[in-house]
Image (cartoon, rainbow, N blue to C red):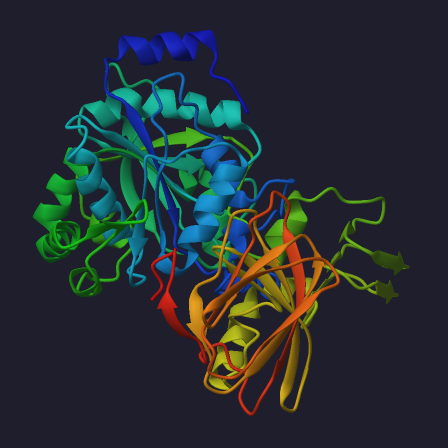
Length: 490
């Protein structure tokens, strides 16, 4: 974790007592990194750059001992237990996790975060960050935050513009104007925001030196953001206020009011506020930033070998150059290729020319139109109690490997169409079957007939591993009738 310099810390302490609240947006689905990223397990939850996931890296980037509060997260309600679990793994306790019942883009997400924080800190400053970006130079990032602090406290909506290194057509741009004024060294006024340009325009932007990549990172006074949102887009602010007012606490999460949040216009903060405010400011920064928005981008930040290849997993490459090849399991052997992307998971393989890898989202759209499972689900499914992995499946049968965390338990449930046979291979299971409870140890098994209420629990201190054999005319996950559930899923 990068530390602030003594000079930066002194500057922060001189600026006043306002606390910076990291606000981490974790609502994306990451379709451009399919097949590794899926709707049920998107890219921010994956360890794509280091041993930690992008979400963990983002949360760890903020220091709680120099004026930073613990992070506030906004995520898809389907990811709530995954997000919470990943933060626990790196010993980060968020001050809150807000659950979005619908994806409405960053404008409303930041709006509800600002309202939630203002109810707890009337002087709150928000450091808004996507959960799925990579920043290699954390010290430069923190220095930029300190540079923007005075402007944010003065009511400016500060964004961070990355100094471009190439004429990239995949990013939006910020055109900077004159310096903001006394006491805000290094902060420039924003002249305009520019959508993703064509190549000729991007080359002109690069040469001018006055344009910066739009990082999607912001330092904002919560009150100032809400004031501008109310002036520019009052309908969105009204929806955010109703979503907070009709929301409720649920197992340590805050569940936003569904109907109110669904009414919010689905606009980014740029379209909802930043493009229309006279109080936009930008801090130019060079922090080795990457939005990890495509396989091409991921290749750019990987460690390449002598042939320009970035290889992950069990990969054998012969006469291959300038390529990104990744295996999540089985051996991938490649011969005589140049400038390609190959990504192999257990149930899908992507093969693309590297220059066309940005078009992966179109493949995902086509798969969804064909009602395929692969855009949304991996073979391994994650649940708050652990995970399950499909081992084999056929007509009227399915085999899964189930892992239950120590102390966790599945819901009390029943199935109308399938029976289940459990074989414990590691650990000890506490099984409730009808009116009886029994301990099932390694190399022992239990049978659950169709329609029988049952529950599986791990009373031990090590993960419980078992093999589940399902049999019956219908084996879908929707054939689960939950009667009681620790995680509120009834």
